[in-house]
Length: 252
Ligand SMILES: Cc1cc2nc3c(=O)[nH]c(=O)nc-3n(C[C@H](O)[C@H](O)[C@H](O)COP(=O)(O)OP(=O)(O)OC[C@H]3O[C@@H](n4cnc5c(N)ncnc54)[C@H](O)[C@@H]3O)c2cc1C
Image (cartoon, rainbow, N blue to C red; front, side):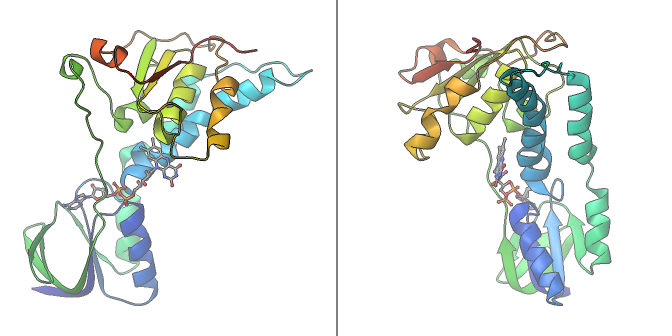
């Protein structure tokens, strides 16, 4: 049985940070990841979302500045750059990097097999410490009819190929708001349904209140919206008692 100082299960931001520090401190480390090293942030969350937001944001900024021609959006170019930024969903460089740094890398789902024991990749590993950094998964809310429409999570929404003509986002906190901003600015008819009485209700009210007025600018992008495999609004979601924020009308 291979023995380590630390076994890390899950190599998203959490596991990645722990692994980096432990390897730098000279510990014998095994890292185990069932999907891609880098986790949600690198491929389906922070990185693609911020990449997608930037172009439309610059365009909207230009639209508010006197004496500046409004640049055209190039969806195909932005999409290619997003794919580059998410490494085309390929973590082979990360696997190699960890191996070169001295870690044992196992690409498999891990299972705790006993105190200090982890099973993965057909092996039983043992360690003084086991770090569980397995992250979280999107919650599918109990909304009638949701199982009858196409539903995307952050994964489909951040790795979108064709901009849908209509998008309904359930949830108006940070992720819903930034995805709403992106889709609205790309020309999709976008609606956020939020159960609280304002967007980003977990944030300071001052930071939340101004945003919708500022980022609903969408003139159509230069690349027309493609036909949609899109999430369609479910009737039940539409009739929910939540705050509904339509986002498709130009405000300047
Ligand atoms: C659209 C979007 C945008 C975001 N933007 C930002 C941002 O700008 N800034 C920010 O700070 N945060 C942002 N976040 C939040 C951020 O993505 C998460 O906080 C972060 O990814 C959590 O990291 P983690 O390591 O805890 O989990 P994860 O990234 O989910 O990593 C957990 C890993 O564990 C693996 N795993 C699970 N079970 C097992 C098992 N049994 N065996 C082996 N491996 C396993 C999974 O495959 C996964 O790779 C965003 C989230 C979304 C959805």
